[in-house]
Length: 169
Image (cartoon, rainbow, N blue to C red; front, side):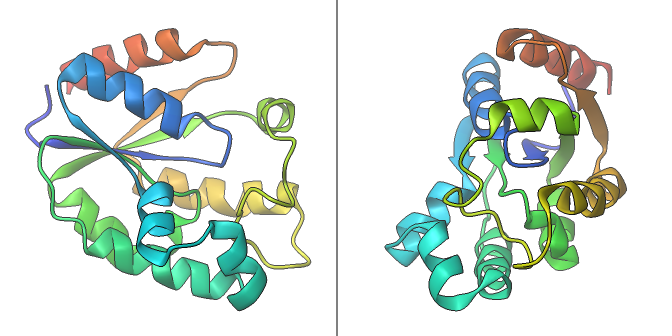
């Protein structure tokens, strides 16, 4: 596979980063790190609680610090959807990682996400999910070494295509 030892998954909430990450880690004999879970564990509270009490900018700051503090090898890292707002964090992760954008359409995300208000999505209070999608898509594409469209595919199909694409690098 790729010369870099880590696989970093980026994409919108609902794109499948956590689920695909677990499957990819099993199939490639890598460790798995879900940075949303890592942040919640480090903070002792949910992402939504951080948003409610301190706002989306604080959550992004906490996320950036957690990502920059990761120093792992042979891991699949599922990032939070807002990870791409920190250029320093993205550069840090890319030092030993292939950045993989799990690209799914807005329609697919809408069919998967039903808990917008409690999911812990770091966005401006007045920002719609559609606007957030458009804003983040540009960032995901900017940082991606590899983009995989997951529309119309199940988790195993996405993982199979992802492994094939990684082997081709």
